[in-house]
Amino acid sequence: MAPPREPSPNATSDQKTQQEIINLRLAEEKLQHELLDLRRPYLLRNPQLLTALIASVGAIIGVLMLVHENYFKAREQNNVFQEKETNQIKAAAFQAKQEAAAIAEEAKHMIAAAEQARTAAAAMAEKAGREQQDAAKIIAEANKTKAEANRQAEAARARLAAALQRADDIQAGVKSRELAAEAEELRDGDYPAAQNRATEAWTIKPTNEARQALVHAFSRPSTILDHCHTKSVTGAVFSPDGQRVATVSQDHTACVWESATGKLLAQLKGHTDAVTTAVFSPDSQRVVTASPDKTARLWEGATGKLLAQLNGHTEAVTTAVFSPDGARVVTASQDHTARVWEAATGKLLVQLNGHAEAVTTAVFSPDGQRVVTASQDHTARV
Image (cartoon, rainbow, N blue to C red):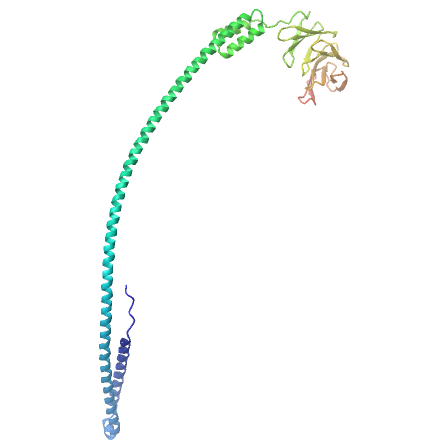
């Protein structure tokens, strides 16, 4: 776009001239009005004024003619300037048109190149699309092949697992039958071993042979504890380690046995009345017994050696147990009391009074710090 044209000096002069002409015409009209207003006789009597008036009118007419001449001269100069400026604008427009034509030609070449590039890009995109489709087909086929391979592998693993399971089942059946046969062979001579074999056979696999071996092995006691007591056996307990058994009897004795074989280890003699209670110490090495003879006694379990006699109750001792650490013993009696003793020496530590009837039970708390008692007076006390 061409910049706005500044007004030429001639144009400015023309405008000023026109304004002067307008002002002079206005002045002329004003004078004519004044002349009309003057009375004619007065003008005749004043020839100087008339002469001056005529001179003024002549001067005005001269000025008007001069202004008119200047106006047309300025207009002609302005026309020459405008023509020159128009020619310059035409020349600039022609040059701009040539430049625009050159740019359009260059743009045409660029558009043609861009179209060629677009066509090539479209061809490449089409080729890439075909290649992508081919690749997708290859990937889909590979995935299908992989899925089929995985399915076949899973089926093979399942068949292998089933085969292994069948093999394990067959092997377990064979092992179970072998152990059951061993249990049957041991039944007449070593019942504990026969019971162990039969149990193991049933655990491995519950075959008919294992079931029969279990029935045979447990059809009678594995160990008979006899040849010790001469009267009724009223109680029996295992040691904490399970290696020994203590029995009590109305024959005034307690007996300690080897649990696996039934071998008699010791007969605990000394009570003068039936032994009602026998309890092992936590380490399974000692036994405490209680009797209606008003005493409780501490024994060495393996040898039957008397370690201490707990005297002090005035009626039958109904129970006796060790503390969890084995350092103390608590006894209960029909004399309405319970007593706590030092296990190592048999020394009385404390007497628990308060019940109104026989105390039937006394037991230590798990931490060994408290004792709970039960009585025929319908109460329990801690």
